[in-house]
Amino acid sequence: MSNYIVTSLWIYPVKSLGGIRVPSAKVMMKGLQYDRRWMLIDSTDTFMTQREFPRMALFKMTKEDDKIIVNYEGNEIDITANTSGPKINATVWNDRVDVYEVSEEHSKWFSRNLGVSCRLVHLPEDSHRPVEINGSFDEGSMSLADAYPLLIIGQSTLDDLNSRLIEAVPMNRFRPNIVFEGAAAYEEDSWKMLSVGVNRFSGVKQCARCPITTVNQDTAEKGKEPLATLAGYRKSGNKVLFGQNLVPLDYSMIAEGDEIISAG
Image (cartoon, rainbow, N blue to C red; front, side, top):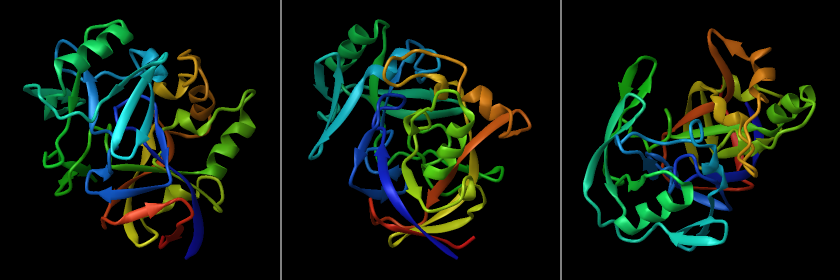
């Protein structure tokens, strides 16, 4: 049993848009509060990400009390306005989820600034999207994240990757919720059970990485790294792995500076 320390916490309120560093966050069944509870959908009601629209990286986010503000080139909009639009059965990978358009005004704002027709939709907290664990579906419930409620990555893991790169990449390429220090590189790969503060989490699966990791979050430019280098030493089958997915078992607050205890 070893102890480590949380160095930063991150939420990504709108799927595939910028992240917000928060000093503390409430753990909920779907993940951290506000994390990936909104997303943009296209004309076929399918989720949109930086894979096809790298410019989404340029939409930056801030949190002011209970308000989530999106900023694009100086233009701001509060996305936590009361949802007033219709219910939509949208697609996220192989899942169908019931979401609600925030408002026509919000959808027009994003369409205008992204340069493509889209709608901003919200996932209610009482919605149900099962979590797949070891080939079966758990009783838990997912946010609009790709596969699991939370992602944890050690600073040493990123440091090891950067030692192999010509140009280092920041942690934001990997969109973790919890960043910690004190462990050896990739030590989190083997964690099956851990606690952060008073909250327990189950480590369920190493995170398979996609081309979003090659998008510069400041410029929206796409390259080949770090995925090309990771493929040389972190490939399992046809997947490149980096970080550990978590499912929460308790629902209290976690904070920067919390101790992490790994129970193997």
